[in-house]
Image (cartoon, rainbow, N blue to C red; front, side, top):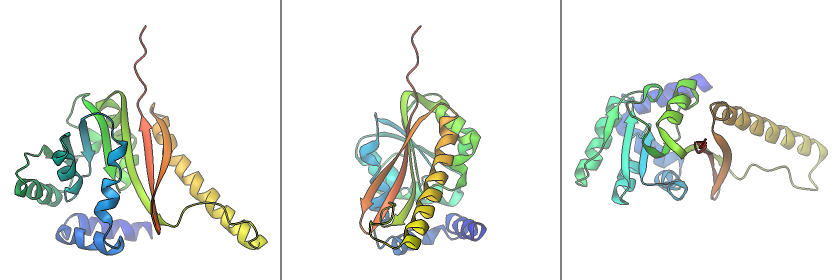
Length: 216
């Protein structure tokens, strides 16, 4: 299933990039851009890097709000689409085509953001690069996934089999989250999870901070 979903993602992100917004709108019941913008209150500072910016909706929004925004994406089609979106609003974008595993930036960003990224975000080289380009005390924000409802243990009074089944799902869900967080913790980040409610959906956000430099 994961291979199939990755195949679909690759199609939407490359040869069928023109249909990305349509598909995203359908699966989110028209709320995709609201989901993406929901990370804005978590931003720290004014200098922002977005990895995997896709069609550029968040790039546009952050520019309009006065942030100093840069973006990197490996898809030629998405770079073209996002650049056109910014151009129509007379925004001078700072977009490059490249890999997050090899960021062409120095240590300069207050916040690095990724919304609904593919597996590249958990590549150890990506994590090291994000850590490198963040200033001390900088934040990483990853809008990772969306689920229906809210991940919590089964209600009191449910049957024993239902409780056990529900607890197993919660444990599996939490174990997977912990594994992802540990990848960032191992590289020096302080990490936590945030849940953002968009009933009937819940967004899962990985939220981290690069420690302040120690003064000798």
